[in-house]
Image 1 (cartoon, rainbow, N blue to C red):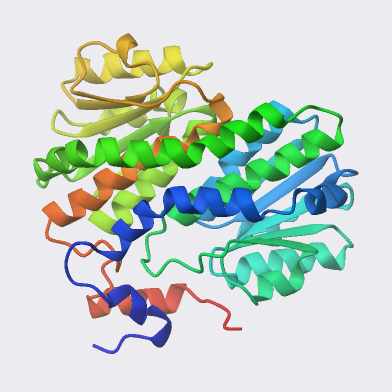
Image 2 (cartoon, rainbow, N blue to C red; image 1 turned 180 degrees about the vertical axis):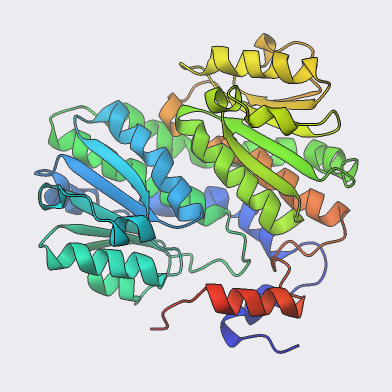
Length: 372
């Protein structure tokens, strides 16, 4: 089978540790890289006079954008809206002249993100790029581009770059907050402490999640639930399970799950509930109770483990962080589970089924990357 040159690195390993495992281990380094190398003053100069932000991306990048809207809501007086880049470009909002646009593309070459940024630039709208590829079309187009020094992830399912995008978006929201006169130092310290905390989460949870995943190879239906900032965790977790472990997985907004989405859930299916202290906690408790009433398997990932009774599995998270920052940590257990579930199912988690020529052909039809 012929593999395109830009995909060959994803096929470079055929046993553990795969590239996806490397990506998970790099999460603390990615957070540190962003915190050490981001030009906060440059962000302030660009965003201080803008009070609405459109954050655009696709897939994992879109989910980072969704999480970031809650950061803007929590710490600034501005409004932020997350949109799929195609939707933004094909159906532009009417109020763009008063906004700034943030485009996210890990590769720096996602065509529709590039087109979205070009469209914004044509209207003299300030544009910020978020990428992990130096000398990309995204960097060329943006007024300011925030780039890590880690390069791009070779595994096709992305891990550390999602969290690195989140942290850069958090810093943009905090820069806006600072330009409004707010004291942001406590939030900066929370972000810095996530370097150590993320490392601790990986070290503490990996052995037990590996053992858990090894018992779940026959389960093929997962629903991942979250609300508020953790809706992005649900969506990203579901995407990773689909990409790497090739199971049927869907993200649920917790309250929307009550309105019919749960009805197809079977007694052997897993419902994973992301729950931290905040407005959605009571909804999470009700979802857990309801799913156990139909004998579904329920796994709760939470900063308040003592509040959940009668569920099948609980994974604890630290409770010292603001709710809007938690997506950067809450996704780690799902990344670990996805990785080890893939291995237990005998799959290479790096390649998204592209060892099957039909799937390679399909990707070639549907996906493009701008070379630069």
